Image 1 (cartoon, one colour):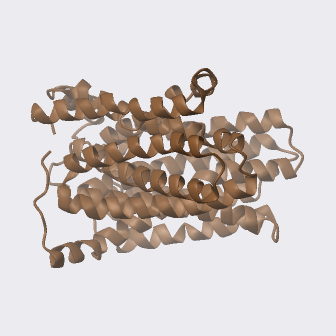
Image 2 (tube, rainbow, N blue to C red):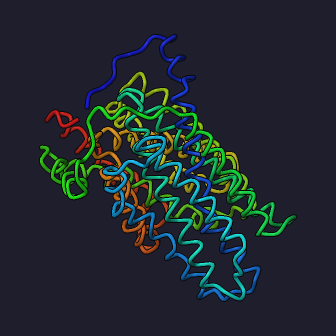
Length: 413
């Protein structure tokens, strides 16, 4: 993987406003929309229907397909549906299945038949995870290496907009219409993804595809681990955003301890911060066209660490809405830029013959720091205090940055 050459202004504009980038944005929206329809929105519906908290908690299990999607990804690399080609064919089937599952979920009865709700929700997450697999593969195969950064940032931003529409929009609408109508409306929004799939071109399979299912299952692992520094690259994926993930897990308790009200946190951190993250993703994507992935990972990684240390400064200055807005804006901007580079980097690691399987595996690794490393953060904050905790989260980014430099010197990037 090498850095891209600087582009002229006209070339940059042609890339930014190309149909390929519009497809990345719209496919991101289609992938982000279903995520919280089996999470916070479904929890609100079940709570309203009087379902007990224990049952609501168990519904976290319906999210397992997002973690286990690498199990059926090889079939999506190996087989080609009868219509639309290998990527668009599977994408269309996943989206139609997703729409049907959302309609089924809309007509389920949380109060009287939670099992039927669970089965419908499981179908939603299965088809949603399948859509994620194919969209990740499509983006890798349809974009040139130097376009992966911008394409990935637009995908991530589209994903966030879809999540915002489904969660924030869905909960607001539920005050005026029934949850059944909310889910039917969200099923209709999947048509945006269906139309995108219909009109988008099928990427050319220059690298070929697996000839047997066994090859599709085994060869992605054999091919990846036959590379030099394969384990070091995986370790970098685990380390790159570990400090960012640890800090973000404890920001809400920190803000409350600092005396900020829930309304202030909602307005500044959730709403304002969301748009700062989207802006960071867009800015990062455009900068990657100029900088290439390696330099972007380095610069954005340093910015992530510095922005995390900003929480320590906020602690020293004390309660200040302007300080909160400044710290949140910087942190979310840097995080958005880092995520764009991170996603593009993972895409660049995949072999286009096994894109779906290898990307599914790598994206599963993305979630490990968020779950494992974030688990002890409450105890760490109690032991270190808020100032020391956020300084630690800033410094824990250094091993990943040093590993990045080490990999570059050995031509692994």
